[in-house]
Image 1 (cartoon, helix red, strand yellow):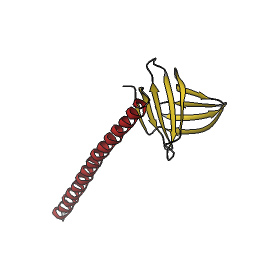
Image 2 (spheres, rainbow, N blue to C red; image 1 turned 90 degrees about the horizontal axis):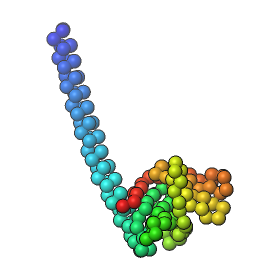
Image 3 (cartoon, rainbow, N blue to C red; image 1 turned 30 degrees about the vertical axis):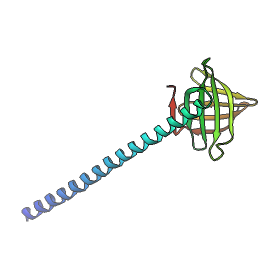
Image 4 (cartoon, rainbow, N blue to C red; image 1 turned 60 degrees about the horizontal axis):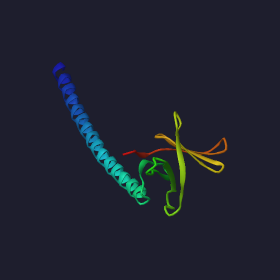
Length: 145
């Protein structure tokens, strides 16, 4: 009876080990595929930012993407930074160029009449006066070259 129990325990241990090995291999493959996809998305973002700023005879200060916006920060030959915000789905309509400055501990700050846009590596925040109207997490970004 002891031999039969030992055999069952050994068999279950072997099956569990095989199962866990296949799960780990699946996770490793998924991570490799996601890493490759992330590199492709990042490369496309860098290309898009270079093209966008280059078309305006400027260089890339930063590129940020949220669920609903593409944000291009371009700097000119005087090292002044300019903001271009583009709502996804209406790429023909960019807000900008708007002068941008950096504020220690805050990020990039853009003022447009009553509206203020604050862009960090984590989020885009849109204010009207002191009221936060909208905040979206950054899902992709690229910084000065």
